[in-house]
Image (cartoon, rainbow over all chains, first blue to last red; front, side):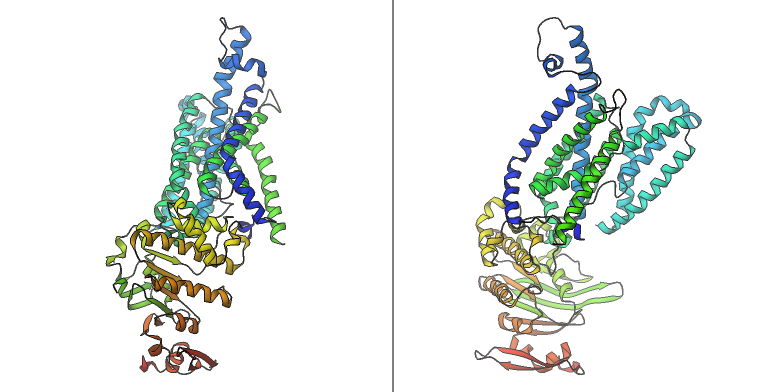
Length: 365
Length: 269
């Protein structure tokens, strides 16, 4: 496919040199930008906390009694904003890294967990949790909805992956092409299921489902952030182990094997990682698109495609973009809040199309 | 010389079709063997079975006296390197990054090998170019450099290894065809067992110690060039009329005369 080779530069030699320099400073630079973005996100919101009050609000300055303003700032920061920023950063990191892994697995920069139905499997389970824990079907369970929703989304993502894996594996070998095509079919089935649930849902359920499908970080809590942290940590450790294998996989499965990669094991680990990372992220945030495609794609243009750097850099750039987008989502229509999924799609889709158009132009040279 | 790779009664079936039928082959250290034969003869299947990538339906492959199935992929990569016919890289890796992939887990120690391989294939000036921006032939040479680095790394650790080349000259101009086959020849002289599928009969005749002819999945001939390269063999295998001359140095060369399909006289093989 032509887009896959489309990252041709006008002067590739110059770009390769620039890429080497970018790669060496990428992680420190991204960490610095993430810190700056987080500070902006801490200060901006329905209750503004100017930079001058930030150290006291964070508890760094202790000069005796805490006044009422500082107490309010502390409450806003520690109960609402910090867990939300942490959860947003981690959700984005998981989505971006899962996208990068899946693209490496498919050797295709347009692959995404959403493409093979992992996200929509989670969405179907979440929509089912919303409808069946409410009113007509199981009103007594409504009090459990907050807890059940993320669990259901996670289980739905994992189940979808398990079914996909079962369909595409035969005699210990996984066909990536069948995985992709089965994913398209499963996405259609899950979308039909979501449609059915929307059809039978009452007004309140419909609103809940719609907001969840649009994606939002408004429900972020310390508990959710704590659920994300170990998955992200484990994911980052696992990324270090699969990075070289994913690099060699770009040569094709047979040549990766000739180069010493246990391709079947690499595929299994990658598929489990993608489903766990996407499942956990979607269970907290709802469906948020384009992060998994746009972030790794942009990074490849700047730092190159080597996964040892691409995967951790995707986590950081994903976090920067989503924390920024979430800050925008909760301020532009304040005191109301815009679902972040609308923003990521509104910004991500044109950026993505821009990349495609640029590549098309280069390809025709 | 000891056998580096042995295939016994190697058979591969796909559904009802038999791709390879009871093929025996032994290649020793320092030997360069060319596999020739028409399209669909089973050449690539044989090479993939010898590389451990495909499992035989029957028969076995032994690499350095050990069943090839008992090697982990990583172990296998230390003993044999293989250049595939087509490698399509979709992400913008540089030539140097691709060649470095041959070095396995120790890229830092392989800097010298990467430099040497890039010089050998004539791509030292393209090391920072993105691979997808190169021509098909240049990409093939970059992959050959990667395979040479893998072979060299393996031979440092385990002694002479096995180099498998599947139509390595298919995208190359004449000069680079010769360069590549000479590079493979140098490896054989240094002790590597080399098996290459070659479509150019004259290239195969000039550089290989032995020719293995496959036809319809069966071993049709296996021996030194003088025994294998005859007008009758060429007519039977490729169904063309050709004359076999001798160059000044005594090496035979084949000159196709016409595309006339001659009735195969299967009895001579």
